[in-house]
Length: 371
Image (tube, rainbow, N blue to C red; front, side, top):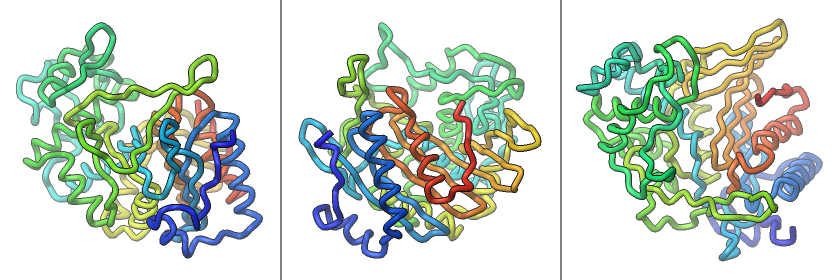
């Protein structure tokens, strides 16, 4: 696809040009990574990509490809702002754990402590269960009219809809991925801290990490360098992903960021200077084990999915519906951050590309079953 072009360092914005100055990968590896990204973009119909490979806090490779907006033909740069979608969840979980360490709330606290007049079915749900998807709550909960989400969704309306959404199972009984659970965890955090969730995250995580282009989604704001999201229809044509609804509280999906800022985020995780190593280790400790044999184990912690191998290697990762992936190899220190603007459910998963890149960088990276 001729408009899916590599954006070279010399032709792009200063924000990535400055960041790229120390990022000269070995030519052979750089060629392999570049070829893999280009092939995936063509075969999976992905308009734009931002990629970073970081090892123990040092950038091995960072590059941007293609276009952020097909109508305007704007190039992806290091300043392009992507919707992270559910990659937000690990940030939410680690913010909650930080507040737990400060005594603002407890993982074993009951949700009803923070929500008066909650349904009786919520009585035994804990904060830990919300973050680990063991609450028994449903995935979707936001109010709809004629099958479509409302244009504007206040916090109160979202909570009302959550309260009216039937519980699927008893708390702690079954694992069920739940946006509702993360929304309620964020709501409880606001009550426990008397702080707005967005500003708390910005003040305690994004600002200290120097993430100046990272923010929460707002459909009203003018967001410079914003990437347009796309889907691909059955005829193979690009269509807008019309995510134009405004939600007032989005701990389950609302962070927007750039590849440059996420490199800063990874470097801070390596240092443990904002989110401590103890908090990350707690978030990435198995809470629910899905499968285990002599060779491998699949599990979920709090905001992180894990794969453990018999060689002692743990992979902690999460993906987002908008085509984003964050993969950390805790044994080698290699992290792959992949941002795209083609929604993940409308073609081959960007997780496949992130894992392939991980294997190109380290041939011993395991084959992970995405199902």
